[in-house]
Image (cartoon, rainbow, N blue to C red; front, side, top):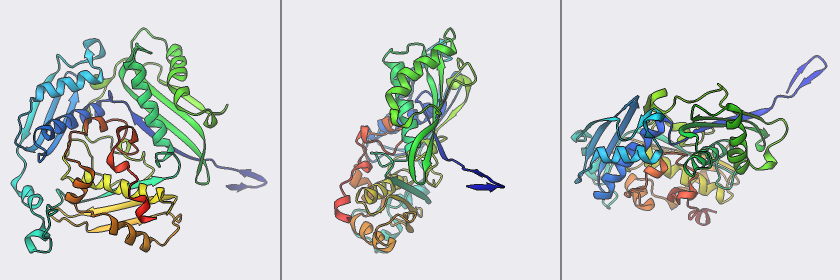
Length: 398
């Protein structure tokens, strides 16, 4: 609130998050990287994979490091993934059957493998159990949860993901056959203090056939995408809706913009509502703590909120390459904790081993589960029964 003479100006508290569809160029790359990871894990659950993908008009390039007892037909995996997304017609500007594919995968560095195969603590004798593998890299990872939605996710990103999933669904099921795979959504939520009270702005941009008017697209998306997803209680006469605000979105996908694995890390997590350590997920096997520890941090934060120990919680984990135990564990409840954060730390760390191998076992991460997670967020994915969304620790720490 600001005072200007006798006029009182009340400033709205707004927060915005975005999502993208699986046909967005960056998400094509995430999907391909995770499809390749899944195929290696399907054949060899101990596969070490760090796979990245880039794409532009007419070409996909796959690169990275792999050590595995497996043979993967990269051409088939890549083309099938692009086909499933929906780029199966040259009229869309990108075609799964005619695009060029370059494979530059090579073996993982033996220097990295040294630390992952046997952790620093195991070499020194301070770890003697089976969870003796080291972290695949250094870094810090964040997990977050809050009481804004049933999934214990921030409302802006959860709504943006729901709109993006619905946008893809009405394209694939034929409800709106003129839609094409590329698309983005964005939701701005107004807050009263810490409580979300209304949707202030919705933005949807979707690729479409050239002969469809912007008026029809707007009418169809409001009826078939927005209204089924956004509850009436959050929409009012002042809610602003933008549909394809440039007026035209025919050229899309890799023809309209190049794509790269790991360039949508905020979409993958909490939509900017929480801090981020900077590491991407897709294409990385579970020995990479960028992925595994981020899932563990989400699990801890969600169970803390579900146990009513805090209304909002952020967890940071940090690791050193080749070392099993985290170098730091931090909890921030933003003043909402019902117990001291020292007590919170004691309860949580007593109930969960945060060494990478222990996290892998707890969540059974050496499975081909990652391609389905590559779009519409890795967190809050109760629809996919992601194990880090389970609330099985809440009763133990409450």
